[in-house]
Structure formats: C-alpha cells, structure tokens
Length: 395
Image 1 (tube, rainbow, N blue to C red):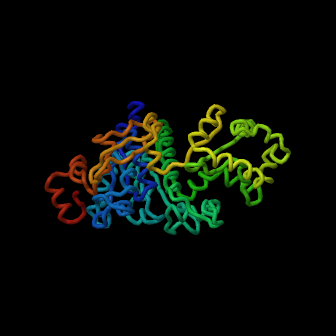
Image 2 (image 1 turned 45 degrees about the vertical axis):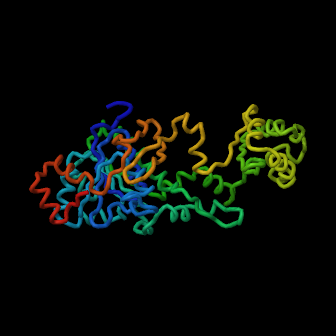
Image 3 (image 1 turned 60 degrees about the horizontal axis):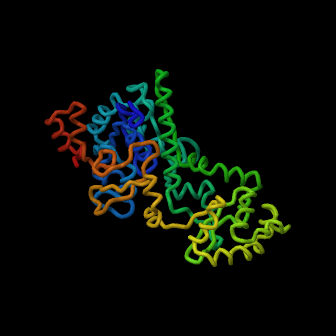
C-alpha cells in the first residue's frame, strides 16, 4: 500500500455498464485495485462501447470509464457463466452492479446472496431513480435526470427555452460520489466485521450536484436571483470573455481597470440590487468598453486588479492552452484502436496517465477472459468447455 496505490491488493468485480458505475470502478483501478470488468457475451459487451463514434470496440464513453481494468465476457443467463462469476466473487472486496432494481436479484447476485458468501464485501448498486419508489424500475440516463431534477429547466438559453447541458454531468457526479462512498466504506471496514450495501442513484447525485442553486431557488419562491451585472459573458473585439465579480471591491476594481472609476458612485450601480435593477443601463456603458478591446487587452487590464476573468475556449482551444500543459492537467495517451493520442485528464492524487501503462488502457471485450479464468483455478480443458458452450467469450 502507498499513496500512489492505496488500494493495491483489493479485488473489485465490476458488472456495471455505461459511465456512472464503470467510472467509479475505474477510479478504484487508478488507485491500485485489481478491477475485473464482467461484460455480457453476444451483445457487444458494455453498451457504452456502442455510444457515439466507434474506434474498434471502444468509444469516447467506454475508454475513460474503463482504464486500468481487465475484461472477461460472461453469459450470466448460462449456468456455467454464473458459476464462473461466483468464482470471481470469491475473496472480492468490492462488487459493482448497475442493473435496474430487481434484475441482479433474479440473476442470483443480489446483495443478500453475495454477502452470504463474502460477508465483508462492499456492494455498490447504481441506478437511475434509486432502488425504491414508484420510478425505481424506470430506465434512465443522464438527460432524463437532468430533466427530472430541475437542471434542464434552470438552463435556459437566450431563446428562453430550457436546454440540457451537453456534458454527462449527472453520470460523472454519480461516479465520483459513488467512488467516495466506496473509499469511505473500505476505510471503515478495517474496524467492521461485515461489509455494506451502498445505493447510488443518478437522481441523488444530480440533487447533490445542484444543492446550492436548488436551495436558493426554493428559498426564493422558485426563482434564483441572477448574478449582479456585469458578471457574465461579454463580447470582446476578438471573441468572448467571462467576468465574475463575487465581492463589492471587485466591482470597484473592475470599473477602475476599465477607466470608469466613478461608476460605483452612481446611485443606480452602488450595490448588487441596484445593478440588477438597472442592468440595461449598466451594460449599455460597459459592453462598448469591452467590445473595443481584445481579450488580451482586457486581461492586461484585469489581471493586476485580480479580477476573475477568462476567455471562452472550445475544447480544442482549452487543450492547446500552455497552462494546461504546464500544470499537468491532461495527459496525451496512445490507445489501441485510436489513430491519434487522446486527451486523458489526470485524476487528482493518482498516478498520471502514460502511453503504454496498464492504467492508461481500456480493455477490449473479453480481452482477459482466459487469463482471469486461469487465475481463478480453471484449467485449459475447463476453459475450452466454457468457451464452446458460450458461457465465456474470449477477446
């Protein structure tokens, strides 16, 4: 065990698909755990392998969610496939599943069944709406939970219409919250005789992710006060800039930087409420000043006053920023099946990704089926029989 690999020696059996469950298990792998990804046979494996543009049997969804794992393909409808899974569960520390509530129980691998054999196992169930309640069995993905929890309604565009945010923020936050819960449970298990069942849902993660705006909206009778102008997005001569003024002295500094130091003395703009009430008049003064400057010129004025600001980048522009390289935020990794190196954000506190390293490769479907079977005591004759019967699929 070390700070780099605190979970070295831990065994994780990951049956989850998509992003939320797999990304949580991927984080365990990045901190040293032996993560065995169990995928269905005959269906292309984890369905995230078919989302978006395909690169061999991977996509931009499946690669980051499965780095550092090993894959075995099992038919869990086949008695022999279930027997293999029981062998994998033996001595496992963590079990991750993302089936709709009730499905895993019908397969015989619910928490009660698994914990009877491995009493100290940490068992994670990932679902859309949770394990109980009237919507529990309803299928759900990130856009559905954005709609259900209020995020889409809050994200109105200039057209006045609600829009979902394009990133899978709910899946990713579910993964991070789930990983946090697993890590906490593993720490507590040092002093416990039994493991525990952790229920993670996209709904719960979405609510937690939005707690500040949700609480503000509730307390304000269903509306959230907008930021006081000129905080927001403004056009410069060569693009767009975000300006964020959190405290009153920053508003004064902003005016000084733009050469209108007397503006805060105007009764209309003296405080946040006044600036909100007189937004149109304020922007009529400020926007022409910003529009006459390039972003570089704006930054040269704002930086000495420590005014929070930044240009609006595309992903490509962000990845090309010198600061991104200098701070090591993103690694460029060669991956099987992809013609060019891909950007892989490094995880906080984990070993950085490097091309060729085991933690920087997502496995092909069933790539490690044979090796995993051998590790769990199956001989060549048994492996051949399992493969011929369809219980196991080799990569």
